[in-house]
Length: 299
Ligand code: SF4
Image (cartoon, rainbow, N blue to C red; front, side, top):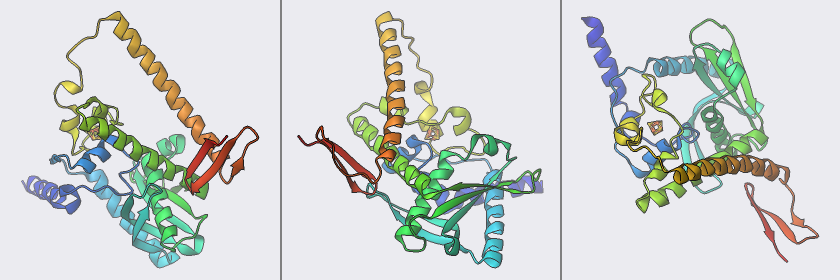
């Protein structure tokens, strides 16, 4: 049947696209699964896909249409190559969809089936990180200036809602998400050091997604079997030693405390932005770079 032939051709077309054959780390990946980031960094083998990613294809076509109208009607710059140097020195490249220098603004169109979820939950970390990296790069390139903002424009590709739902990230939020990226990359590098020593369980801690996501037809992560095939997903062995179980529970409790403390640390750090000097008790406060704070005891 024609539909079978055409579907096979569409799947092949997607699999032959350069980005399906060689994965790179761009702004859209750095807010996603950290194990995906590690796999790309170490050049892990990628797995093909027999699904036709309709959601991604529709999203791309819709995005191109909105970009064209923004360019023709609002004077936006579109499809602008961007290079961003992150505070940890990592250089990331990508392409910004819509840039409005006169508004000191970057915009990115995201398509969803219905907008109720994004209205309720807010934008994903992936989306926030992606646009923050673009804004930082555009400021570094001199296209935008410090204080720029980013607009995430959500479109209902199901067609029920005929509006654009806009979420704006101001410069302060952008700086926050840049720090999040730096911390996530540090997690990956730290885990890789352990994995290099044979402590492969560190890879599991980086998996930010679960199989229903990784294997869903719209995602089909190229590392899905690497992550979840075999005994790693459901350990064969049942732990029965009460002392070990107690230790595991303590570990989970300490990890939760650590995660909570890490959030508080971030908040306090933001409150110290711009502060420098020495406290009467001998703590020195110094911002070595825009995103590197040292609080050290000097006497
Ligand atoms: S399969 Fe899932 S957990 Fe593994 S790298 Fe991909 S998204 Fe992450």
